[in-house]
Length: 111
Image 1: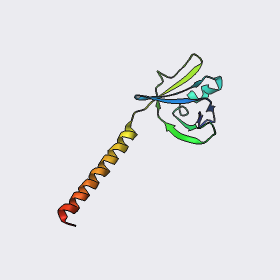
Image 2: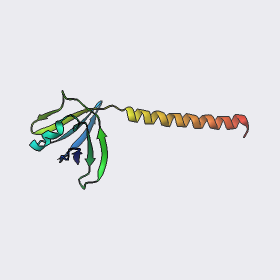
Image 3: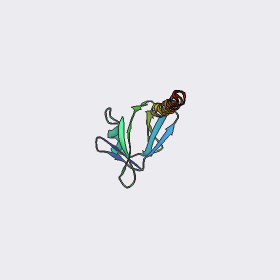
Image 4: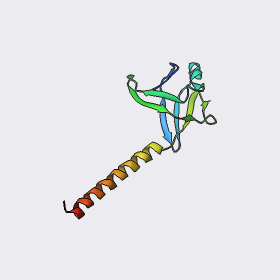
């Protein structure tokens, strides 16, 4: 996979891994990747497949204390949680409950 940042830099051979409340973008380090570490650039990127198709738009706060280059690998650590997933599940639960209430109302109402 590749990660394309809004300054035009594309990180090749990237991997995106979710780990509890963090998501880590990692890739073999190249000096041209240093420009993506700037404020306003690092916070978002487009994840591309190896064929160039857009997989996902990604945006999150960066954990600067954990972002690093180690053993010739760049690790950009983002602070993420499951808020969107929880909200989607809550909406599905509410829709299910509303459907059950509507069904009960039809039974009680005799319609």
